[in-house]
Image (cartoon, rainbow, N blue to C red):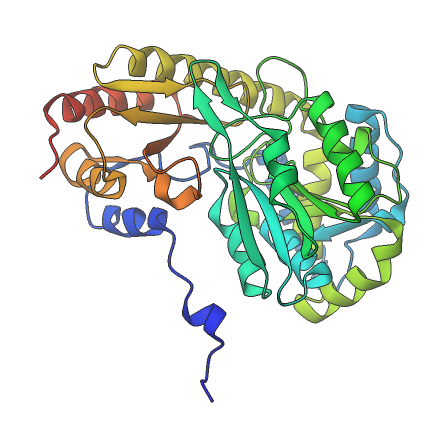
Length: 388
């Protein structure tokens, strides 16, 4: 008998990690490969966590998060979406990724499949594989108008073993957002077929044409099999805190109580004090952060569009651009050479499954000064780049 399950043995590292590891050996690299800004967590959030730590909040906490944080999450949804969630539908998770893993553990049997709208952050798809499920992708189409979804293609990929449909809105790496008409059609299809929806809304605040992205919770009924994953990482500059939250149907309460107990036994109370401060007092920071991302978006877009050979796929959400470079077929090799020769870190599109194979992802959640330097280096590199 093999020591490690085949699903685990066969897992491959994300190509993003391949490039990132290479970059650790190169001085003065401007890393635009990861999904985080160059801002540290705001001081008022850090002070709240430090104060709780000093006050002795170092003991085990409730599996689903301390009650005061769950209350803040409920109030946050009321303020931004006008919806009221009962406490039993809310769980604090040890990162957004942990929320996805919990959902996969809860609903997927070996042999089930999950239809995923891609390009997509690879870790979420891997969670399905680890749980014994099969991923079936439906690729967004890219063009001058942005990314477009053929929703009929999603329906066509579903069969009797389809357990869930997964999408992220706004998406990573695309910035694509589902609009209300397609969300309603997707929800109606899922209800009729008894299929769950797993929805990543981590980038819900980082949008440029509206105050907040549509949430599936605005149109879903409480008993719909809808699982919504959130994270504190992006909007509050808390990537290293590894904290998120999960919204699920009331019937799933007992399952998630047990799964959190057997995975992490709940999160750290002092970190949750910081998360409370983020939700309660963080609106000014979020607004400044989105404005900063908007400025970074404008800098990156104008500089990239001025580069020969480069095509940018526009978007109105998240803090990434996907770009095509004429003459580049091997995007992993391109990104590795960009690290060494241009000292700019980018993410190869091959990491994000269907629809991104010829693209490169660039994170623009950085200072304008840093982005201008990165664009200077990248433009010179692309101008002379040829594949071996």
